[in-house]
Length: 133
Image (tube, rainbow, N blue to C red; front, side, top):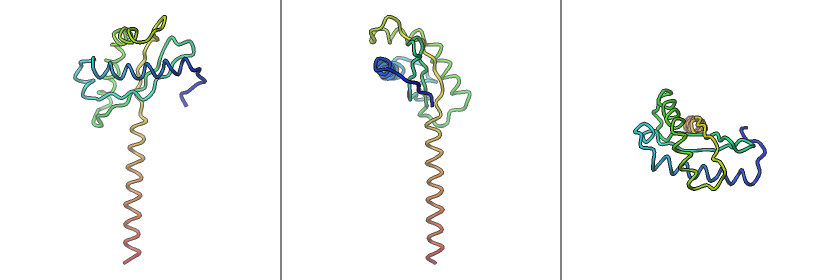
């Protein structure tokens, strides 16, 4: 589990960063690769001293290659200064945490589980048909 013990202030800042970064990436990052990928921020984890934030990203586009995913993450990490400056306009803090973007495979795991469950369901239906015959 990625979570450590956090306080209310950290939780509020994490939620603000998640909400605002989602909007900024969607509205203001004008890179075709990022737009095509359809970035979803799944989680924001602040360091205990609130100097850095790990941003966990998933992609709506299911056909991205590993290289495409790495390229989108590189673009977002390279845009850190721009993103922090946009956050600074909306979040009242002495200093905005450094942003580090990571791929979150949680959505992939959910899809695999759903596919596996669907296969099991079909298999059970076929067994029931065979029993009834």
